[in-house]
Length: 467
Image (cartoon, rainbow, N blue to C red; front, top):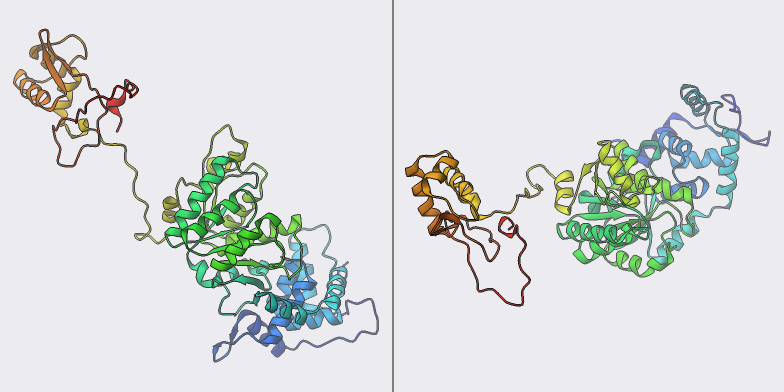
């Protein structure tokens, strides 16, 4: 049951209210967003970092009520309100109004929520967290820090209170050109191969790969990115000092040397099912676009795709075999027109890149010598039988051209090696090898006819139509 405005949210009747003045609210909000009057930006203070580190222990990751409290009043004021177990009256009224507008059955129980925050905050030791992180090589960044990616601000009330980072790469700089690649943990050989190709291709093109560091697609794309030489970002659902999955300890060590491992969970926190889904919003928000390599109909990768759509990010999906259940989620996204079909790293860069600078090359069908023939010559060639033979007059009638035109075309086709003359007339010449791609300057240049190798298998009947 919500508490009336102006009353204390506490189990004790002797608790006194702490006044949050307008000046305190503005100062706290400026500190939390990294903006201030006159100077434009204010440096991150130890007090602000300690307050956010404490709140990261007090509230669950992605807690929307805590997000709104910090967004409206700032982290230090939120810590003080939780310590006294007294929320600002206007905030309590706003939450009640929000519940009514959302037509919820009952408003949120702020009393229970604040009591839970208070119990966790009492046991928290933010100074010890900061010291332990520093000793392990990790660092805490918060909104307003030079390394904070500003695109995370689009999450609004879902913006993380802070991020723990462990690695050599600068997170903000790395995410300026980044693509999230997600997919199934139980990936097929096809999915792992495609993910590795995307990792290599994006990395070699100077794009950072963002993923979750899990088995399957995540692990394959991170390894591919490391091979390409560009940074890669692993977003964990546990503390940066916890290796999950444990078999990826070598992979995470390589990522820390070339990229960065990040988490909104404090050190020592272990993953839960809910934290995996909540962290997916960070994967989608950090990157310009997300590509789903493999996903079943019930998949965490589709959860990441939903976050990308809600943030108006580009979304791509890699098609797979229609008989594979691991690609059913990708096909659903394509069928519902929520995602763009992507089959290569170049196409994904074309989707998320700068217009005119990151265009993918247009795929063209293979060229064959027949493509260089003009329309009249092609008509004559199509009218020539492959068996037996036909005279020039019959060929001219079948092609619908004059006799003089047919004779001229027949001479050129014979010189080029397309046809041959027999006792019964003209017929198509049997080709012993497939045509190679014709050079741009070729018109009626005959294809090369190398000496056949007796050890080779005979060519397919349609080889002359293949590049």
